[in-house]
Structure formats: C-alpha cells, structure tokens
Image (cartoon, rainbow, N blue to C red; front, side, top):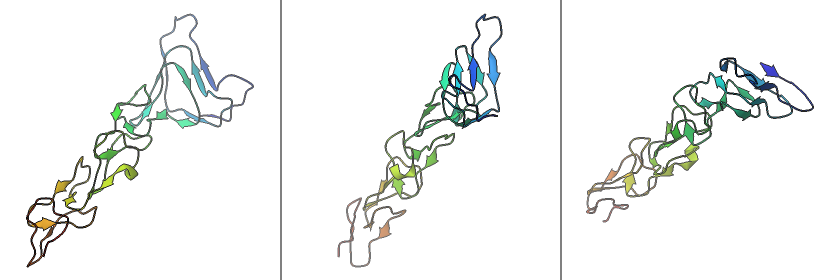
Length: 179
C-alpha cells in the first residue's frame, strides 16, 4: 500500500529504466490512497500491472488518483480479460445492457425496457417499452410488438393483455383495446 505520501513534487512511484538492462517490472496487489501531488505513478519505462477484470493500467505515462489494484474501466465500457492497458478496456457496453465504472460483466436492462445503443453507463439509459409493445426479457435491443388480438396501454409492460370480450385488437402493436 502506498498511502499518504506527500512531496513537493514527483509521484508516489517514479519508475524509469535508464540503462534498459533490467527486464520489465511488474506491479500487483498495490493500493494507492491519499498520495500528493498527482500523478500517483509516473512511468518513464514500461511496467506490467496485474489487473483484474473490470480494471486497466497504462504501461507507461501516468496513473492518477486513488485506486486499488489498477484503475477501473471507464463507465459505458467493460473488460472481462485481465491485465488490460486502455481505459475503455475491451469494448463498449453492448445494446440492451449498461456498464457502470469498473464493469467486467455488462448488466442487462430490466424486463419491460430496451436499449438500442452501445456504451450505456447506468440503468437510467434503459427505455421503457412503449404502449403496444412489451419486453419479456431483460437485455433487449428492441421491444416486441403485441400480436393481433392483444395490446398494452401503458409503457414498460412485460407481456401483452388479451383483448376483452366485445373488443378487438386487429392490428399488431395495438396500444388500446377497441370496443
């Protein structure tokens, strides 16, 4: 743990390999908290970090702020692999899912919602299925239209309702029952 290091200038760790005679260094299981000034780590030579899924660390340059192990993947992105080196980790969060900071497993939007775009950071990006459509399963890119003979009249439904006796819902995607 590197905690509370205070200096007039510099970093908690300054790594340089002037002679290039040493093999690449590796850092694992490190915690950086309350170090001033930033950057926390300055790397003028390549460092290999042991990062867990949902984390990354640059091989050279700077790492700033407080972090445990490695830095978290940016929100809207995820990383399932270990030892990633870019802040967007492996990929943008797929449609129908959201990825908070440090994600390694994209989270599906709730049942009754959908999300057609990539890179969502929170479940607030998920959109309720409109009337006339339903979302039976979470993680959907689109909502399904109600079949003829059924309808939904409110957004966010998990299933369609059968048209009541004496009414009809002839068209697919009905958002009301006609009497």
